[in-house]
Length: 324
Image (cartoon, rainbow, N blue to C red; front, side, top):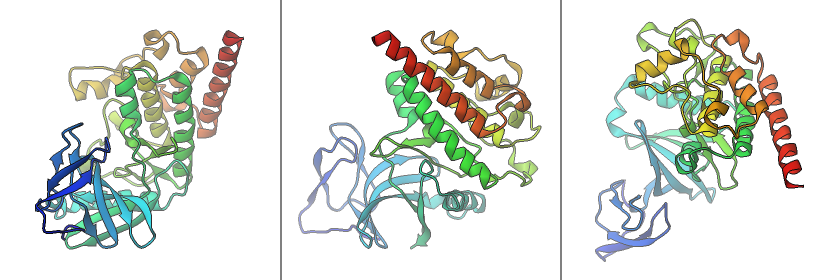
């Protein structure tokens, strides 16, 4: 691979993908290497061509790879390219997880699930091309605001619950619902991403896999390994909304193992005990969706969505009355 644009000069001016400031960086920088933006510290890189995709700026980096804001020169549209870390490309299990993410999303068609355009390999690089959603995550909003306004939390809850309903209609479990896996596009619409742990609801889990997921949002039946279903994803979404509403995870503990087992053994503190401004219908919806026993939760996503929509209507009426 080589930089998309060369030149005789030793410096090239490129915009920072986060703050937009144009800075000069060495035109001889190695492909995919970055230097921090002097204004905001975000990694800045030289544009680089991967087939018809021009990788222009880093959006985010994770354990599996890096996501780049890119441009599809064939279809003339902005996309996101997720490039797997090259050191992982010989790890069969990680490659299967990377492929699972692409295939699981590609089989779903919902406005709140990130769209996958391609999964390919070129010059040893494995990559996924997907819809661009680079306006931050729910995690970013929580970090910035502490507690996100209740109306915004209900809106994202309704949208993501609808996305999970679509996945369940295809017999698919996400198994890693958390604030960092809910991204926003330029129109402010939430997009569910990262189906790397997803699997069919009736698929048997290999014993050597153990329990995979994020401990602060994991459903108790997954921790105790007594079975998992779409109700496990519902619990994780409710735990995510709990954090957004209150600014606190449902169960805090000194280490991740204690945090995970708290979902099984510790009674849930209602979110309105942490944030008294949360309305009663919203509080009740979250608590019911986070019942320890899956049989005590909403039994369909339609029921959960209806409860969130009812809470939203109640909140709007309350606001209207307080303002009139």
